[in-house]
Image 1: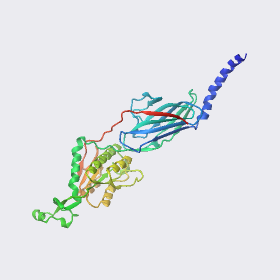
Image 2: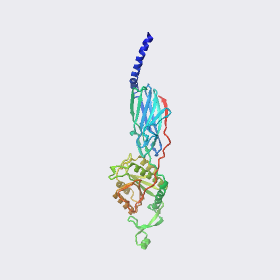
Image 3: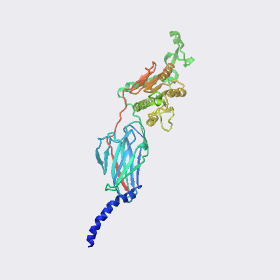
Image 4: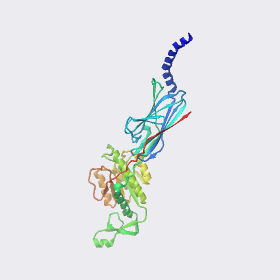
Length: 404
């Protein structure tokens, strides 16, 4: 009799358990799941691995048979690109890619009561610039194992990483770079040593009266000036122009600016090896001091670090940058202007500099947009090679478990 009653009660109890378990599980697990995602380095090369630490903790006394973490990356970072929809396993974690760009990572695992799971995934810096993980999206999908009740949670992501601009690969453009390095040697007369006479040239209004070559004046009938080599460290001025439209706030060309940043970084490194002191000015927005145009003396490493954090936004027209250079550098160190956009009055300023004896070289990106033909006396260079990304070989997620 008792056994028969139990057989009648057991299905009722089982139905009550199946009906009540999802409700009870939700009440016990809600607000007891912690997710922490953070990036580890602050600066990386293009294509370099960026470790991303993912920690999920279950603070309840009930298990989570199904846990799915969806992590998106900020624009410019990527997981390994593999065919869309491909599923594979790393240990006990199932991975599913959502797109060829690899911007979504889906992790599936489980959590025992009071357990902590730590995973380290690898992503890659693809494009130059400051990438803030606060713009990324991290969400958790949980269910009680039967699929009757699902719980969706969203958590913030911390950290930021700067992807440095790619350095110029020499390749076919080596002759052009060596030509620019030759200009650096030629213009060491900007720090003249009067015991190192190099030659004579046409007199300029700002030249000193005592440097007039009187014998050459008598022979040629023109005002001539003595020119000296330098026995001290030469200075050069690097100017990066982030203006691509007139007015400057109308728009931008991110790819073109990234190329210019790579050219600045590559040439700065080469000039620094030759012993040059680099003065830097730029009109791109750099965090912590977004309105600054004149950055003063910088090393090749610091210039690259600044450009790794720069946004593809101009904080002013090129005219303001040229004015800042004139204000801070009254002398005549050679100027290397990295720009793919000019308006006529900016060319006029460069022509005035060239006429006054200042050496001006314009280095453009692959797609220059000039409203006027370059003025004679201003040297224009368009490099033929660019740096290439060196991607890593694979993506992996390493998992560890611990009970708390």
